[in-house]
Image (tube, rainbow, N blue to C red; front, top):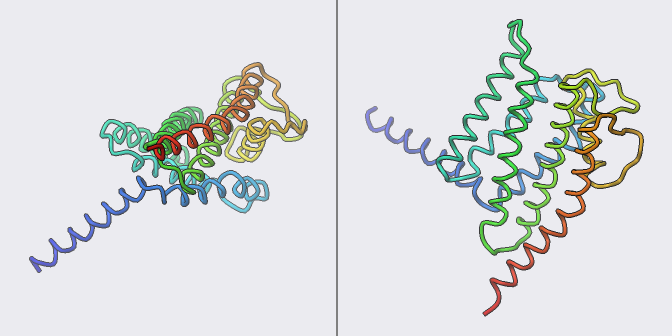
Length: 237
């Protein structure tokens, strides 16, 4: 019995170390892309047709933020991402509890901070050396989709704080169900498509829409140039 416990501890420690090391490799970009594709393109459809409870929706975002804890070996960044994740988790638990307090706005603000840190961590991983491969291209796509999610969160914050952000066909209720419209408009702005069915009606939302459009134009050019120049620099004798 005395020998079994240390062996189990070593196995758990080895499994934990493998898990943490995986999120620092290029291969983790592929798993993250699948999660983001679901979050950005599939989840809004499921929300619109009422196929998932809001608890599931919140679990998806919590898992996304949870992966951010393992995206760096820097102790300070690990501490920051852990603190933000557990703050987010605590606020979401309180929201679904019987407490007569409204934590939705605070929860969304912490969510924005989580997303900003997560984007910065992924950019750091993307350019951590001069190597370019298919995983780095996937990593660049991940950052692009993360910016779209961040834009959706900020549009929602603007609505919660001012009472308006975007308008058109939907009736926004100020809850998780609105995510489908916010992520749609954020993507429309980021890709500069501009269908016109939804539009910003508040000055902060208008400037955010323009900002996302600017990022959508500049990001591909800057990232591609950075990846290509880094690869050429590495191959230059």
